[in-house]
Amino acid sequence: MRADRATLRAASCAAAATFVVVAPPAGRRSRDVVTAGLISSRFWFGPVPGSP
Image 1 (cartoon, helix red, strand yellow):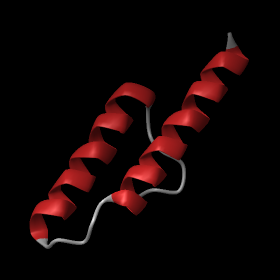
Image 2: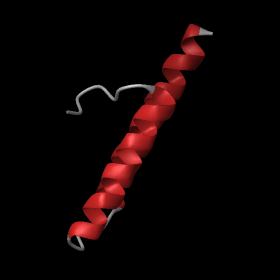
Image 3: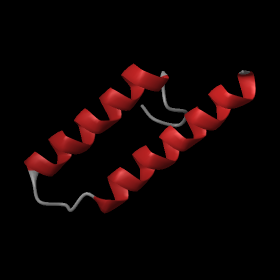
């Protein structure tokens, strides 16, 4: 069970990092979308290591 949780967390971190890289820098709206994505990943998976 512990390995599954670690794998899931690693996958969520990778997905969040990919989301940030893929999101185009189109002003304030894109930053809000990135912020919402990071907040939702924290809600589902807990705090993301290395993020503020």
